[in-house]
Length: 237
Image 1 (tube, rainbow, N blue to C red):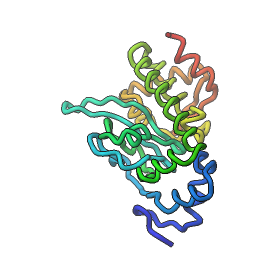
Image 2 (cartoon, helix red, strand yellow):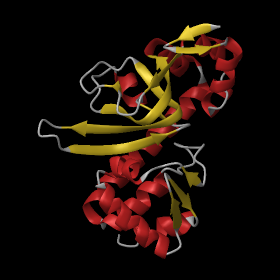
Image 3 (cartoon, one colour):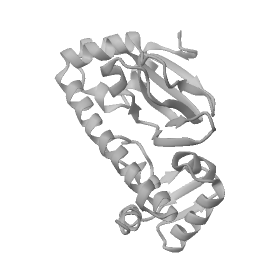
């Protein structure tokens, strides 16, 4: 038993955890061994900073469990949320590749178990592993599309449509392959992902429930009609 970044894990358990992520499964055995040897696994409480804006990007960040968001806060306390990353998602590859100061904060929206791949390991995989390179290219392409959609949605859509698409985006098959139909999300957490108040999210969810696109219960949202949710969100474009 070893302690990795504050989490007690055995080598076998660590491999089992990593094997839940498709990019790891596609690696050659020697590259899997490198990742297993160097990965840092760490727990972050809700509200804690996983990484801070303005710091050098030392790690590629993966969410094994929990939920994080990528956001910017200015000196007046106003914020802009770029994306929410649920379990199974990875983020920050662009900053690691460019070796630049991180341009956003990475914050735990709920208690999260995070996997941190050190930059030297990430760079070795990128240089030596064709499957990993392909994964990162797809990841960057899909992330760019997500960010463009986020700007579009904020500027052009009603609040109800923004909430609909924020929920639908959590089911992106490439970026978030492990999202289940029942989201263990509170209205406050959806608000943190969209930059909306809990009260406004509540109003939007009532409308989406009336349209039979979702159902809600305490601390959870069940998506009944994912394609319908997307159509509703995009209907104003």
